[in-house]
Image (cartoon, rainbow, N blue to C red):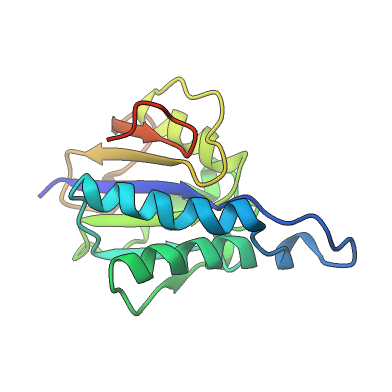
Length: 165
């Protein structure tokens, strides 16, 4: 069966507390509104989720939890290497994913996610905004087969997109 990878950039983060490290920044009010909204849009698209994988950074983890709640999923796999990852590191994560999962949602950060989406499917996405989603489909049975240019862009959606489903 073909594999589908949904890249979700974390929701808008709060910069109010300058004492917090980048890793520990929480979602702000808009981030807490956009994440569940985007999860609902995904459900309306009838996207099935087999596995959720997230950066352990607080804002990515919180975004993933909103999606998990919407899908009644009680387990999120946290991968430290997603935080501050470039395309090479992200590809290593994808290539190690469980082949038993055909539909995977990965939560992470820019600029890595935008670069990764463009590299996987030769897309021309300038920027994945906060809480934005990019679905990429691959004609493989194995995540190990995923590499540069092997994917096909299915959709790109984000909170301020007027073309939502």
